[in-house]
Length: 161
Image 1: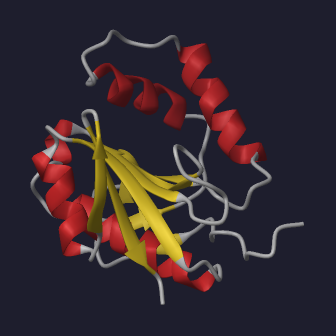
Image 2 (image 1 turned 120 degrees about the vertical axis):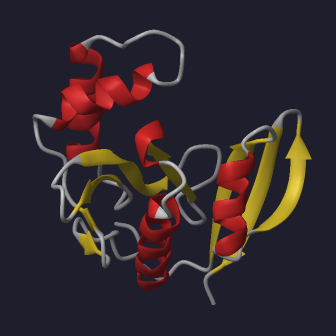
């Protein structure tokens, strides 16, 4: 059993809902992944990713981001082990390009950051491509600081205390 409280499955901000995954999200997640420019993954693949999120036993999760007024899926945000650890997880987010530049990533990540504090953890990590200036700006706004660069990946940390 983990000494940390689980990340809540519902978070709300002024403009956004972060909620549990639903079956229809698989088609939207597929389109989001297609925006990465490496082809469109099979629907079964994104359904499998969602199934893993639903059955995760780590207390960490990526949550779909839905705009409150429009009710549409615009991406996801949450905590993962990723390149980090269960004790000091990574914050991760990805939004549709149509949702970029409107403060949604910062708003969702701030909600996850606050929820992460309540899990009892001391620090979060984030890893971002050196080329991703928009994501680096989001993390700066949230108080993350550069720890080191490894190849084309910037490692950042944020104290939760």
